[in-house]
Image (cartoon, rainbow, N blue to C red; front, side, top):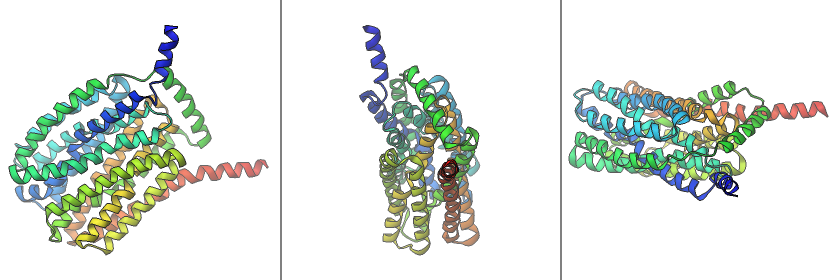
Length: 415
């Protein structure tokens, strides 16, 4: 009798109240850990002045942070696959503490950039491994759960820029970095130990059989699917990076001020959280693939609007729309991986695709700065992002629609 109760308890862990509690802790953890993705964006104008560099040079620390974040996503995901989520979170907390304190003592743009690469690796503990871990605890609402887990990075972009801008104005960017470095581990370490529990082994075995059957139906080999998702993820974030990385500096150039740009960035990312959660609800109904196509199409439309409007009020509206349109794209890659690829490799595989998305953000942010330096405006940078979005839309459309067309052809021939 006790054994039956034990088995029932283990099977009830998935989609259980405990799973939802774990979701809440995951969102808090991601919000704190991903501070490294946004602190450098708010500091960009001050760093440009402090180290006497061009806009492209001031964008290098962000690129380094994203490179560290992308590499760290794979490493942290692999650690989560092997040792549970506790290990990468503890390592990430230590790296964030060390990195932010060290950043406050840098004396050149290159020192600052190298330290931010280290910070990026630490922040990676709050993204890919958390998404992978939480996906094991939900079946019926997996897309919504993954969207929640991915929202930590956007909540970080909603909360942290306002906090950092305030302290940067009153205390300076160096003291602000020290404060972040001391705060992060105080939150991350206790939550890491609260997430020690693992899902039942029998549950993972059942899900592995389901993913194998789904992959056979899709008709693509695992590595082919992985490769398409990697390229698509890179392309979508090349497009996504332009408004997210440069909107603060763009508003400064237009004469609206850094504070206005920070507010617009916060609005954009706050509505991105709404978009991510809404996309999770919709994807649980229509599927992650169709939701991915819809999100990519709407992001392209928003990027076009930036080409034609740049008043203060229009930037608030367009950036809000951009946040609503693009927030649900990245989580859908993780849902597709969990649907079609082996769950025991989820951390590594999700980490690889998210690495591609972060590399897209890094390269897109850097290229946008270089395009600005060459042309003297952001107009060509917005166009550059739109063209990359078209590449993403073509790839995800092929991925979702082509297997279905092949199935219809086989059905017609059989008839």
